[in-house]
Length: 314
Ligand SMILES: NC(=O)c1ccc[n+]([C@@H]2O[C@H](COP(=O)([O-])OP(=O)(O)OC[C@H]3O[C@@H](n4cnc5c(N)ncnc54)[C@H](OP(=O)(O)O)[C@@H]3O)[C@@H](O)[C@H]2O)c1
Image 1 (cartoon, helix red, strand yellow):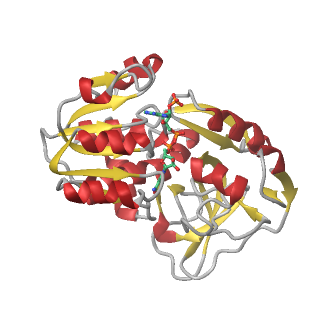
Image 2 (cartoon, rainbow, N blue to C red):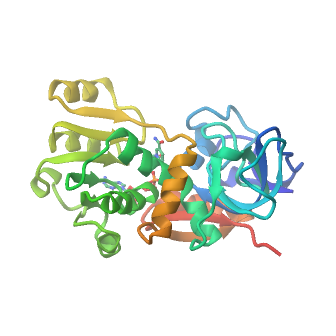
């Protein structure tokens, strides 16, 4: 099979398509013929300098988001049969190797892909969607009518978080550049703020929950408008001790969350898709062998939604 690998850390030019052995599904695993693979910031950080560090040193195959069809099932698998359309985020944060024509993973790291989504859309959903879902339903848990502030709302996680929070009855304020405001309103945002032009504290009254996909100064500023007892979930990385202390001293919950493979969460996302309440936006699709261009575009920012790699099927 063809897979995109790298021999060293570095810029997108290190990504190279090679011919390699097709994996075999082990006990409780499925072999998936990949139709599309999502591109996430963790991919380009891992490519550049190891990111979370869970893949070790190159060579490795990047990628976690997968949409495709089941090619074969390993011993003990009862959930799927060959030919089923599936999506998932197998093995995260350990190596899944989604930038390839075939991938294996534990069966329960996948679900049947929603019928109304294309393969590209289904590949855009698992990692970013599970992050938004786990942040909003396990970690912060805003109640109906409460006010949720979502930073980076035009991004992969943000645009899904807006739709999930709106579907669960929250009042949603989103930050994004002005060009993306109309799309965010259509997805359920009640208020949209341009992060470049607007002073957050002047624009937003106290909120109950913050989903912070930006980090750094954005986390600190957001703490100031979070009500005591409210929760700020930050996603780029653990906050520094000074910011954590400030949260504790003001009676606010500040939590770093790392997304986990989660079949129940994937089923919940599928349900929202089926109800027409959640649609992943695909900003751009590239062939697998053009993974380097996909990384260049995604890292540059400015898009609405997600970048994916596609493998045309005969
Ligand atoms: N902890 C976890 O489990 C987990 C899971 C998924 C993602 N993440 C992390 O969460 C972050 C976001 O991921 P993603 O997939 O959503 O990335 P993404 O698709 O690149 O989106 C990031 C968004 O943030 C916006 N942005 C940049 N600076 C901003 C600011 N100062 N205020 C408001 N918005 C701003 C960008 O807008 P423009 O491009 O228009 O400037 C972009 O829309 C990344 O750091 C990623 O590594 C963590």
